[in-house]
Length: 296
Image (cartoon, rainbow, N blue to C red; front, side):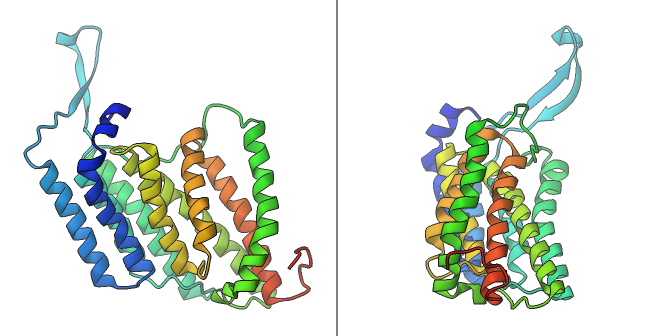
């Protein structure tokens, strides 16, 4: 869909998209499962009603020198708001079946792996093999090198995280939402868990939710919608108190950076650098003096 087309289609489609995205705070902030189910059903149902009866012609993809003798090699499906919102709903439903409180035992880590992995893999499979529209992709690298601005932002992420995150975690007490890590094994498990969830964040919130919404709305609108989902997940994960003051700008910036770079590798690098500071702060907060590199 062209930029002009998306711009004119914002208001007819915004209500069902808002309903689906609002299911995230219902699941992860309010933790009222039935309300999340209701919002998903209303959002997808409203999208279906708005699209019902509209003629949407799929594009036949052919290969050959002449049209009359060209060989059909596939069909490019036009974006459907109903299909795309249902993919987001599938991911949210899968994540919502597990508690997101940070735990480091074997069962908890297996639970996170299956649920978070399923929330990425299942919508991808449904999109590609059931809907056959390839709406979800994971563009690992852009075909250009990172410039000075991009390298500079990586440094800025480390500096800003070092300045802000210790103050947030320690003065608000939210570091206690993560388990005590007082042994080398637990510290290693925390390192793996923080990094794995950080990578998953970009696979789901940016490459799945944001990418699907961008097919129907301008980038700024889609970015705000994905941020609702992103920040809600982080809230249940432990970023509470005044955490949204940090997580909302972070979610919006990640969407903006992805639009500018078209590189999953870059947004993952940004996130992992941020999470490296988070990991250090959590270790420091639970073990004062172990990592005396922070001001707080």
